[in-house]
Length: 230
Image (cartoon, rainbow, N blue to C red):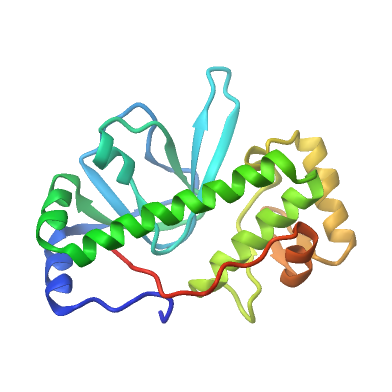
């Protein structure tokens, strides 16, 4: 995929030894669980997942979505106990790494070390945008931003045609991301559908007009740069 930068030969040799295997998960499967320690970290190779936190009464806040090329479990590798969970949103294929070899990567491969830092900084930037959206955008602007953002991410890794993707979301996922009730979410998505911006399917959302969603949200798509893959 042209979105990802090429490995240098020594990097590829190390990554090939760093990788211990691949894991497949069905939609709804837990990948990592809040409050646990994991001996592994992962890179998404195909499919969708989401990262979330849960309150004691079961209310859930979805923090971000994970697509091909994204790291899973980096926080646990650096801090220890995970303070979030990750669940497969669709059928998922993950590349599996031994967590305890991460410091070998930092010690011997500065280029890959920079890549890990870049991925963490990118995640921070995305969370800043999400916080701005939840804090200051109206409900319809929040929904337009979320769907435009996910469409852009999906299209960048080949999950779509002509810049348009089908997002494997339910309305409950949207509600848990935006901090809205399911009733309010349903009304908001219906407005977007009536404007011809999206088509809501049974358990997915088809993006019809990405530019229209971006304009409604007041969101400027980030500059398209090559990104690392671990």
